Amino acid sequence: MAAEPMSPARRRQLIVGLVVGLIVGVGVSLWTGFWLWLPAGVLVGLASGAILKPPAD
Image (cartoon, rainbow, N blue to C red; front, side, top):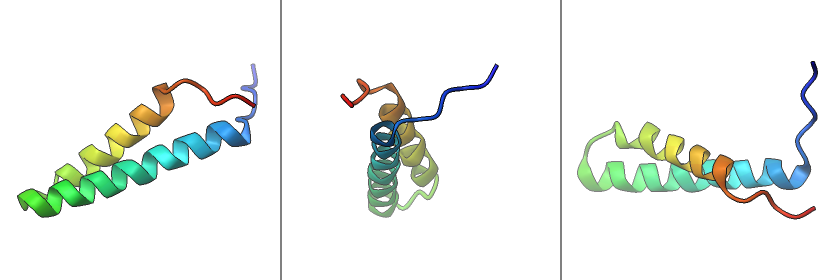
């Protein structure tokens, strides 16, 4: 069973989620001095990008 390919709008939504998570993770890790906030921020960004309402095509 092959998965259907992602639409460009959905792919862009996931990339934006990753970028926002990376920015938040870097900001919080620099603010707190605790480097493990970076991967946590990236994962939160990826998760929120994945669960948000899919964009209209």
